[in-house]
Length: 220
Image (cartoon, rainbow, N blue to C red):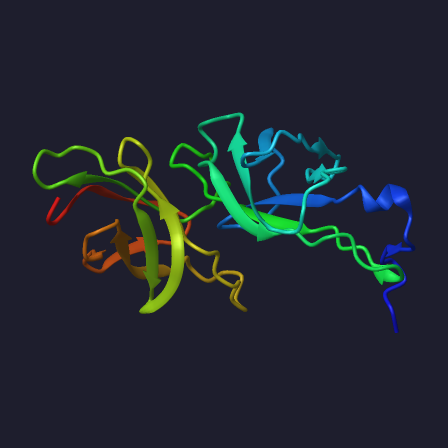
C-alpha cells in the first residue's frame, strides 16, 4: 500500500522548476536535533535555506541538475560544535505519478570540548600534542573502546588540541539502589599519515569526568 502522506508529482510546470533539499542537523553523540542557530549552505551555490520551527533547513526552487552536492553547516556559537559537511546525491523531480523525493540530508554535528554536556555525563578530557615541540594537534579523530568493545568515533580535538569524549549512557539496572558503574576504557587517536595511537586502559566512574591530561602523539 502506498504511503498516504507521500507527495506525488503530476507534471506541474511549477514543480518541474522546484527541487527541495531538507537538511537535518543532529548531534553526533546523542542523535538529538541541533536547536542552536546554524549557518547552512550548499557548497559553491548561492541558494539560502528556509529554517523551520522543527530546526530543519529547507532549500526550495533550486533549479539544479541531478548530481552530487555538499551541505556545509557552521554553528553561530563557535564553542558548541565543529563545522560539518555532508556529501549527498540530489534526486531530480520524478516522472508524473511518482512520489516527490524531498532529498533529506542528515548532517552529524560533533560537539566541541567547551560544549556544556548534560549532567550526569561520563567524559574523558585531555589535550593532544606533538612529541617534538608540544604543539597542539587539531582535528584528530578519537575513538572509544569501552569494556573491550569498540564504540566507534566519539570525539575530535580542537585547535588547542583539547578534546572531550562523551561515553554512551549505560542501561539502568534492576536495582534502584545499585552503585554507579566503573567503566574500563581506552582511547584511539587517528591523524593523517600516522599510525593510530592507543592509550593504556583507564577506569572512570559513571557520571564523572576523568582527566587524561596531556597526551603526546608519537612521530609528530
